[in-house]
Amino acid sequence: MSIDLTFPVAPFGLEPLRAFTLDLVDGAEGLFALVGLGTTASGVDAPRLYLLDAAVHLPDYAPRLSDEQADVIGLTRAEEAMLLVVANPDASGTTVNLLAPVVVNARTGVGAQFILEDQDQDLPLRAELARH
View (cartoon, rainbow, N blue to C red):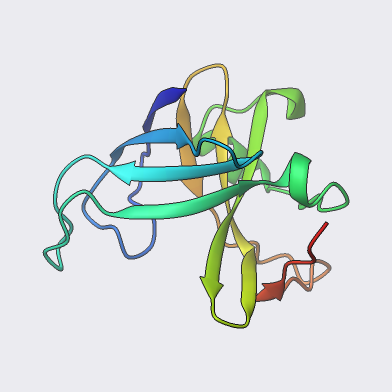
């Protein structure tokens, strides 16, 4: 499965790219590769981020977007949102970025990475992912 996505603002570190594909990683439920179509400002061709579907791997994770953030991707109903988190694997395990999720409007294919600045949402940049 591959989904074409457009970002109104390039995700952090992937500037100036705004066009991506979201590819399901075979054999890994809820794991996706976000692949940039082009070259980043730092010279990386077809950059790749690994994203986890929060509904599958973090069912209790329920960040709140501001109205302005929802407007950026044309989100009018929470049910239309696909909530993804950046996964950072290393030798000691995998961490996920809960502070800056990638949210996709599943109806339109428009996505964005948002920094959750609400003081009531004390979310970590690197949360350890528990194994199932």
